[in-house]
Length: 105
Image 1 (tube, helix red, strand yellow):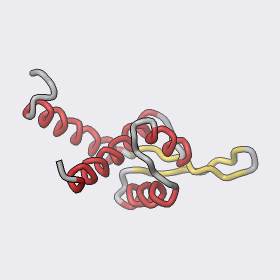
Image 2: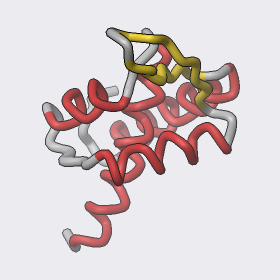
Image 3: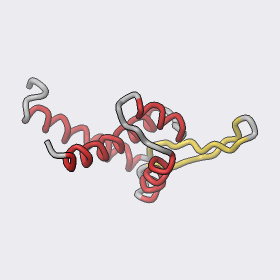
C-alpha cells in the first residue's frame, strides 16, 4: 500500500480517536499526545493543537479552561455535532471492515 493512503487513513483515525476520547471524558493536549502515541501516532504539540482548533472551527469539539496547579489548561469535549459525525464514521467503518473481510458478518 502506498504511503499516501496510509497517511490519509491515519489522519482520519487521529480525528476519530480525538472525537471518541473527548466524547467519553474531557481531554487535554498532552494527554492526547500520550494516548495517541500508544496507538502508533507520533504527534507533536505543533501538529495536535491545529487539529484541535480545526475540530473546534468545525464545531465538532468545544473547550473550557481550568486552572491546574497555577496553569490554565484547556479541556476539550465532543459536541452534539461531533457525536453525530463520530457515530456516522463508526457506521462507515463497520460497513467497510465487513466488506473487505476484516469483520465477520
